[in-house]
Image (tube, rainbow, N blue to C red):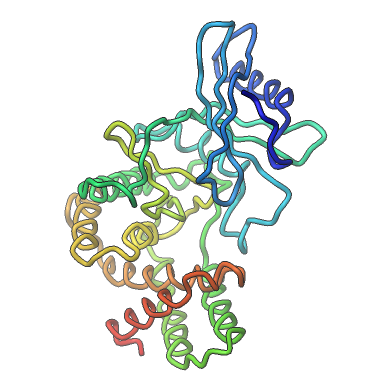
Length: 324
């Protein structure tokens, strides 16, 4: 049964036309495409998305994942690039690699509208690494990440990825400044946070030093799906050129020390065959501080969510590193 949904989603006839063009362009030739089911993705976060089932020429069934842009500001101080940016990441980077990623069908812009659509192959029966019952899935995620970073560390000069965001000192310091502003708006007296942010500013050059690579940008365990034993990271709108340790810090955020240490080991094995360059451990600790500042320095309504435990995490890190 087809049900027209809220305005963030296109009308079925508009979607039908866009998907027909996308599939034709990617080599899925057909004479007639009919949408037979639309199902909203109940776990969508930043952007609305849905699962669309299509029938080609009255026979073959194709299940698609459609993610839509909407007329809201979701760039978060330049951290996210949006749906069109994510499509470029798939087209120019991900579909060229041998690592497991969802099939990229294409992207279309809706005529006379600001709405656009990223079209991927739908992966049925998946589970997020954050919810899996298999403890090895975290280690698989760390290995996937190490392989991804190792591959892209040597491809940073390719013209195809020149569009990627690149983190600089201002990128990092902006989160620290906004985190302090957030604490002030909350009327919290956090003298230790001022000390920690000052130390972070002095250490931020470590995140700008080699080796850099292409990062996912939000490689949290809830953004990595398990499908038939393989891992599929989703939501690539924050991909950028930066220190790989940022992704590793995101993956292990709030996980027990034992799991975190095992993931670090598996990551180093995958990226550098077990060894690691000088400064790796320092960069990783600074990346862990950045991970908390990034969310505390977001928009006020986002920073307010979970701010208590993030402040606790920051304080524990600062004490452990001797920063406060």
